[in-house]
Image (cartoon, rainbow, N blue to C red; front, side, top):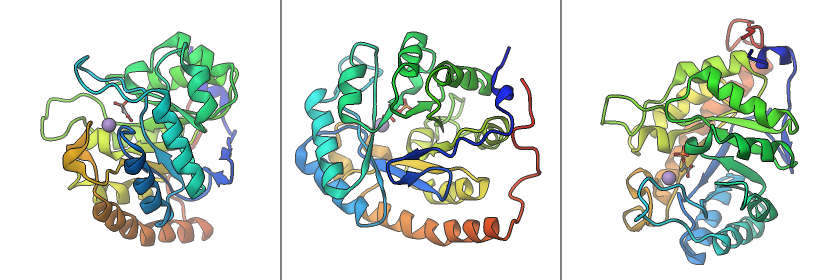
Length: 282
Ligand code: PEP
Ligand code: MN
């Protein structure tokens, strides 16, 4: 039986350090993978200067091919955490297995569970037993119900869960995955948890991120994740979908008035959706 309906009416109001995810629109940005000190420091500096407070970057990478770059491992975690600390940012990075969980949790503020691991129940159970917030990505072909039930595994012992829609497998090669915007709306109706939308892994491209980011703001999502690289063409991973610094600056400037408009509408109690939030039992 789905338990998420049991949390009806409960608003998590998740805060991490000075970042309160239940207010405003939060951007998690940074490279797909941490590659070098220079890369991650330059990226952190650029993003922090434009108001981004959460730096992403993979150190343990779940690559489809074993011949692709697998990440820097612990040195990557350290580089990410040092760059973020210097800029007063929080970090989000993927934890791939139970064995490396203590290591990743020793460096990183928000522990990401990747799409390929959404149903790794031993990892989810281990994450329930520790206190760092968890960003849970939707599996590549997971239904919304399976996604919410995976979140319930972590919620058994750790209330600090963030849901991340990142697109699902589809038939159309023009986008890497199919971004499920109705899924985002449903997650916000069916669960009390903050919802973040990963626009880079869902689209696999840069040219449609801005309109989708506006859509996420309008949908009421708590934030978005995007990949940013100082030199996308030279990236060791996911360069095609990485925003350049100029792209990132433009995107952040583009969404600013939309975020302000949403805040104003919310302050005026303009209903962003019909008043059914948290009312659906599984
Ligand atoms: C990532 O965010 O680095 C990643 C691998 O994404 P996903 O798990 O959504 O494919
Ligand atoms: Mn990536």
